Length: 330
Length: 246
Image (cartoon, rainbow over all chains, first blue to last red; front, top):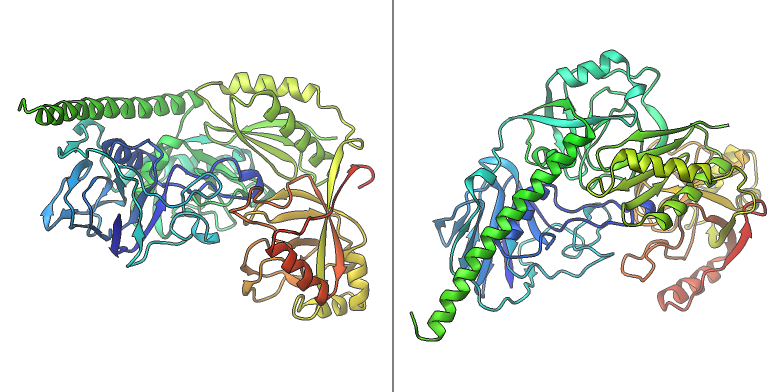
């Protein structure tokens, strides 16, 4: 069990998203930063797509009446367990009666809290993700509030050992992002100059950024004729350009269809980096090929594999140790 | 005639675009291709999203390359045919209570078109409408086929809260709000049916490619059906027909 003492600015339950209903207009939702949330689950010994708490800009305060094992990844929200600093990108034991508190994000924008066993909100249409706009899934379809109680699946034999992610697997959240994109589907509806401008100038993350999309500000992107198309499908990562000429990068909660021309799509592995960007951060785009995107995805999966193996090895060691204690060897 | 193009939508997305026209025949081909691909290669395709004149194919680039997928889609396109009149479609009856509190803008739509409210209702229920696609909110149908004689502009100030089931008109389009949401459509009625039930075994009452036939009911029937829906004893009226008949 985990009690929300303070939810922070905006915290919600998310998993890897609600797949299979986009033809019905149902957005995917799910975690904004797949990399950080997956690593949190690995460090907590969970399945990669277990439900986690996603916190935004300032994290919450959580009380644990029973012992637990948790992992924190993503934005560095200066976490403290019972007043003592705990390391980001690590998993650790939480004794019964503990309080885990997060502050403002020093780096990044979204912090993830995974709890061993996973958070047991009901599945809605195959997912525990919260789709805030329609009030579906997660914790009663809404952002977390003080007093909410999250049920956690019981795990036998929690580890007492802290478990830190290898330094090489920890991303750096700077204020200058370079995101790889695949041009299209409607790059041909923009002037040649606009595509060049898009790839060669810096954009700034505006204050209008949320789980639906990131509105960027910078050089105007000009359409050949106009911004409107016959509405077609829209996916997270798609970069829509309305009449203002300012690009909007679609994120996890984006609508499934849209009526503005899309100049390019941010590749999946790089979208996690944008999810950690805040208003004022700078973004530039570089065109890549399918093969580059697939290679990036394979590298991402390899990092999960390495982290999982390291975690399994540590856990096996722990099991051996606890077995030793049981048998009076130690 | 249309020209087919395959476009890139990120490393996981491929758009098959059948030209630019909003036209039932083109949309029928989109749905036909969706079926062929989902049945033919479920191991590579994660999801397909049919829209007015294009099909989004979300695929797993770790198991199939874009080139291979394009090749397979090209083969499917060759088998697609051009006549869709004999395809079987579902026509779902949507009972609607028109006017009054259910449709506060019915009078406006009538006077805007120099019609009586009863004539607006008669025109609105005169033909089944094709669901070209679903989008905007979960389950929101983009319908085609409404008579231009009942077209009406959007509200200048959108309403903050529109009840689920509201039936509206915006320009030459008509639609239903599946969930309570803000919106600027002229509201002419409301259905007692639940369009979107996330906890139900089939969360959505209808799919893209189906047809909706609106049928006028009175306030008493509205509350009777509403009760039946609440106790899950209501069975929506669905009939099958060829596309030509619809």
